[in-house]
Length: 296
Image (cartoon, rainbow, N blue to C red; front, side, top):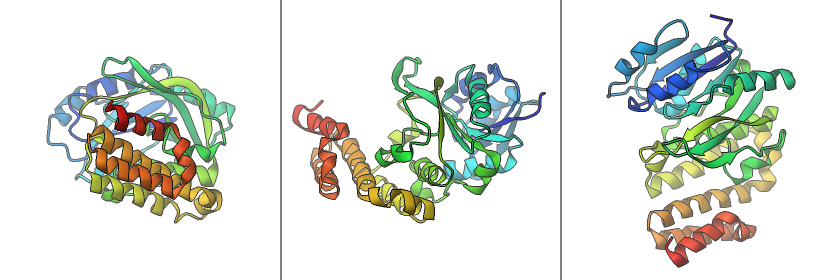
């Protein structure tokens, strides 16, 4: 095997039905200098048996006690041998040219600490629903209005990945990526490659769909609170803190409305507008109003 330039960390928990396609997408890469570190976060299904045929010089498997996805990613990062670390959830896919595109951009940007390559959100049949391919290098204001990066397509130089681990507070799970990306971007900046190179596969059993109102509110509050403990985040985002908080409150409102909890959704929408009145003009606010009025 070639020198390991990329370490692809694949955290997984009870995803035996999806994991083979994820691993196949990695083994189909046109770029050869990579390893795959599968971190099984205490699965109780057939994950180990499903991974076994893929094991070899390129793919390794480690099982640990359940600690949620942030802990699994950190565990994989500690094992990584590559010069860059990237993360791929066990139900998502890299397109064949993903690592090649990333390597080209890394050379173009002269070893950037933090790179993001574009991805698309697809359905289970890989029909494209949304593309995230309009990001601008060094524009970290994108984090004011949520998390366009997700975990798909993020490449961290290994020293940065180790210096900035995911926050392992389980109550933060589901927002731990935004909390980390905003900290890293505030400290070292962000470079982008807008060639679509990966797919976030939106399926009915995706973990982000499982939530309750109390936990959702708690993790959004925690994400902002933890992020603003960082001095660079305070310096670069303090003037936008109300806008950030309002955006997350409107995110909760949208989830509630889609879950047919209209009264609660309306209350959270009002809270968002009170927190930062310009949010009334945001596309998400208009979508919430549409669902409230038309029921669809």
